[in-house]
Length: 248
Picture 1 (cartoon, helix red, strand yellow):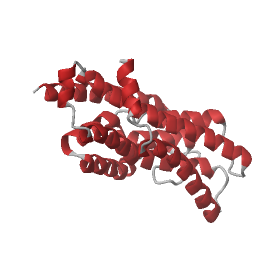
Picture 2 (tube, rainbow, N blue to C red; picture 1 turned 120 degrees about the horizontal axis):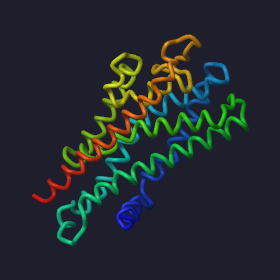
Picture 3 (cartoon, rainbow, N blue to C red; picture 1 turned 60 degrees about the horizontal axis):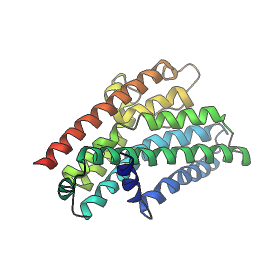
């Protein structure tokens, strides 16, 4: 399996995908910083802004884009059908694509943690505890994993446009559903909903009051468990689909 992962990772070398995982955290930090200065908000609102935009944009459209770019590398190289004749496991190939995309999203999340913490120390941004920043970033990553197999499936079955449109759709739906009782049934809303008790911000970017019901921390464990189950389901279903599709 390690050979599949190394091969898949090599496909990202000198590509836009690697630039994306570095550029996006920096963009969100700069955007949130200048927005905070223009709005003259309180210092602590900097973290709230970052972790409102991060799951709303990058973990919806960004993960869709990374998944699409990963799939397009193989489609441009002639597709997957010829690989099975060379003794390559199609199921392992699909799994390696999901793992590598997840890995790059994790790297981007870790970079966000580091840059946010250092920025809070060096500039008057309202430095948040490292543990709080780390918790928020990792929870967003965990609750977004299940969409990677889905985006890869859409990119392979219907093309890049459909996969990206699914990310755009998810961005819109996540805001509408995250503060509703039905949030648990909408995968795109999980990360935004869990940011409510973790960083104290509504899905629409407004800071929560101390007594707001959305601060209920009991949803954190529920959201993580449901998202990981969803990831296993989408991983299994798309792997089975991909293997059977390529054998025919």
